[in-house]
Length: 141
Image 1 (cartoon, rainbow, N blue to C red):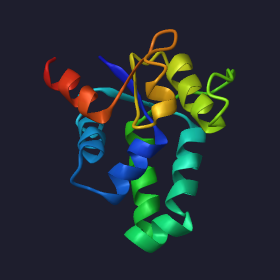
Image 2 (image 1 turned 135 degrees about the vertical axis):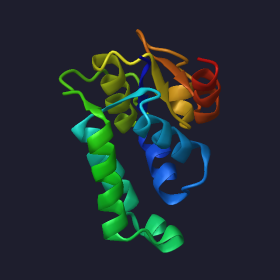
Image 3 (image 1 turned 60 degrees about the vertical axis):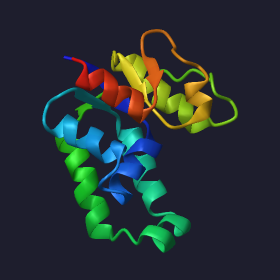
Image 4 (image 1 turned 135 degrees about the horizontal axis):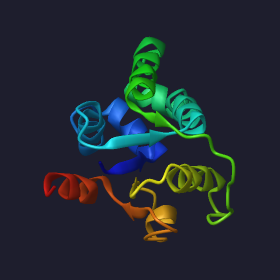
């Protein structure tokens, strides 16, 4: 079964726009179409991002909805303990954590909309792709 990490920006998009491609990917993970590899650090970063003022002001996610979404991720995800973080993206240090989760979780894909990661193309094993690219990959399996 294909293993993939969804970057924080993909998870945040899935939460606030429930009809887009990121939301579709979370749905696919719930259906078991791929194994969602996740870490405590990704859950925490997602929570922090969803509580930012500009997100709250524009999209109005309630604490209840945020907690339900994070609980869903925790229930469908396979958790990885991040023990080693390489500094491959110095311009955006949280991206290093996402990459470490993918590497240590033996993920085949890291799904992101972040150019810092997408410009890497791949690192060790995970291939770094956009949500659209990953949907095409999943639908071709």
